[in-house]
Image (tube, rainbow, N blue to C red; front, top):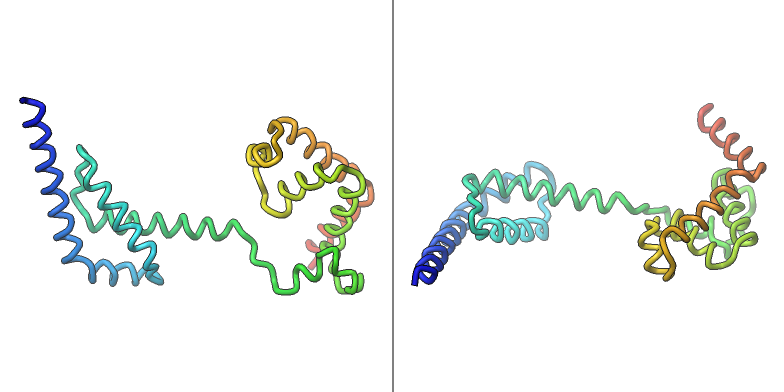
Length: 195
């Protein structure tokens, strides 16, 4: 009997919290949108996701949020920063990047490639010729295409992360100890320092 009364009291409190939050949000909707526009472009998806997140947090038993405005704006800003951080993980190359660096781009002359692009092309050719295709793919996924972690590579390749780490480190060491690559890399660093 005691548990059912306790449950009913908790349900009533939860319903009351939900009612108060819904009233606040209805009254504050336009003001919140205006406030968030002042910080930059209003992202509708982020606004909606923030509403759902804050609503869930309000309904958590034992969690009392006293200032909905500040909490909502703080959650919106945090979600916006996370989205920006995720987008900044990816490079957005120019339209002709893949034409300049792809293997099928043989029609481009050596003069069309800058020193760094030539070095990258030569390193990838070296790795492809000296190591197995599987090791080449690991190297590409780790450093060039997706920047996978060793754990993610292990899941993709079906071998342990330590084995992948050893293979990739062996390739990196071979590239680092290659006298031609080391010298060209140093020259590129000097050129970029001078200009």
